Image (cartoon, rainbow, N blue to C red; front, side, top):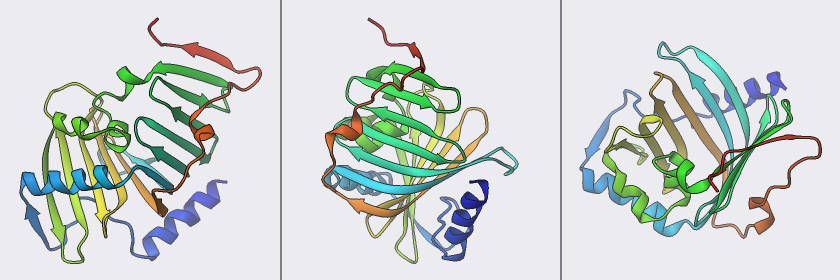
Length: 220
């Protein structure tokens, strides 16, 4: 399985579709309003979204700490499913009320309130409405090939992330980039994208596996 993810990552690089947000390439800066409009157009036009993803976690010096791959499904408002298949199985499933985090190796399910967990998170940008954008300052740039990179910085010091980057190619979201408060950098590249697919609601419900330990962190 570990070999598979290295093949996937190599394919992305060789095809020239890896789009680091702050690559040193010729680009034109966007005004805050223009950068915000790019994200607003995505939020307004995309009600559902399906893609494969490759996720790489790096430390401050650029050393790769973790490599993962899987699939995701998004449905507004407030529903998503992230399935990690490589190198081990994990699932994150959310509806408008709860989020379930399942680790197959640990046989453990953690349940959280969606409202508290999504606030000031990248997930709120992907499955929330326009109000989620009010919590950020915007900047960005447009490259010569038309790729648009938008950087969002939280207006408050709350949340786990110092900045969030969104990369768009021909209007499609192809990259999510996260800088957290531990000086770690996460790159998530999306491929095989389907915009506004018809998704089965069952995707966003979670059945606790038999024998799994459950940690319920919801506030009653």
